[in-house]
Image (cartoon, rainbow, N blue to C red; front, top):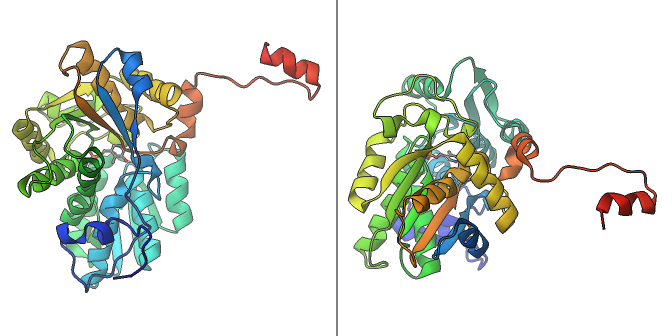
Length: 356
Ligand SMILES: *Cc1c(COP(=O)(O)O)cnc(C)c1O
């Protein structure tokens, strides 16, 4: 362990709560420690008298919460002597795997659904030097192939079925409890493959058990309507949503997500693409935070729940913003509130364009 005082990632910070030892080679980019931002403008805008906090996971090193799981998965793969990793990805897992793979000096393979990856995410995996294979199929099919390959070749699977991913990701719950002094009343979160809701709930359960908090938050998970397998109770063969990070029709952690819902008294519901876009724009224009569309499903879920009075006034609410909006410039420009005015460089033309 290093004796440096500066923050050095979540394994070093939370090692006593994680399955690591002094022998584990820690592969870190100093992930975690993300801001929990009070969102009073948003609360006012949606007409809810409550404390709303946005946990901006987009400020992780590769721009999404996937870094929390990847530091653990790659460190443990290295400890076990593996020299190659593989994942299926809607984009962010591949970016994180590629970055931590590069840092660890391991070969990285990523399978992605061709044509359904936000540009920023693809550019990351390419720059970090991963072997990228774009398949003519969706995420669920890519994951099936990855499971197959990792069973038959000496390549470690780093999707969230890898238990170390969940271990790393549970650190987000620890940070929230530390920041608020207790667990919040409600925890809103997008649901795709359902690894993250599983991980947060595990973190909340573990710290409740050692009296670091006094209660569990109600886990409020939101799928995209076109990919709402858990809500509908059946696998969706052709999931569709503009929120590509949650375009998943057969969530790997399905039962664990239902367990989190049931034990916490929460819900798993869905939001439409229109509701996602409304929230995506509102978060940016009221709070100055650009998240990616999938991330906005948490806030879209809060807006929906507020309309049906499913959240109590005066409560503490955390919404997870899972990834950085810079990853998906196409959608940002498509749905932006402002356009770009072009003028000559003449000051009078500029003043006219400013409309003042
Ligand atoms: C991976 C991801 C999700 C979905 O998380 P799951 O653990 O698959 O439920 C949501 N938002 C973003 C930005 C992601 O990268």
